[in-house]
Length: 248
Image (cartoon, one colour):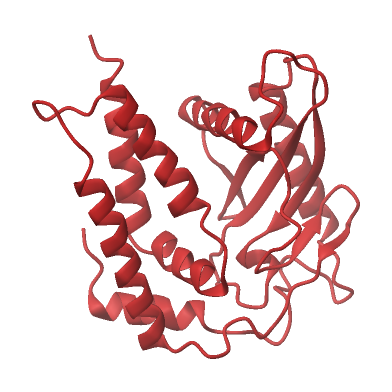
């Protein structure tokens, strides 16, 4: 299903809307995450860690942070709660020590977790939790430590300056063309992708779609991708191709 021009205009306008204060449903006037929300998120993060990698010796949790739109001045009424759980490889000999290798492993572990569990919600808002090998020190939104109960990076309220609805939509459409060109260029044999091509597809999705965050433009465009049908359709397609590898 394609989003209409009217839908794209509405979504872009919402993304570029900057509020004077942080979301009062999430933060107090002092800039602290409301305690009942903080404890709920920490509880869900603890559950996810235990159900995924908690039984692997040598792995420990580092920080647990709230970031994304809900930790910014341009949140939307139904913005997700984006939470990252830092997983540190202290002395596990079976898993990679480098962060890129660990991130790949954690992406698989997180995907398997959501395949067999219901998604989490806080109120009516989706709690999007991910395992990560590290927490970025540079972000386009605030980064709030739920463990230390303070900001690691305070949010800025001028990130959308210089962008217009038309320019955001244009950048979004260009990124969609780029993604489609990559996907269309992947080889198939009798309509089937080989395992190594499925891995290439997944790596591109993880790094260039979900993880591309080098500029403010990248971040705002990803918000468009996430808020439209593009992300769901692309993720669903990639998941379906990976599942075909297990058919027999």
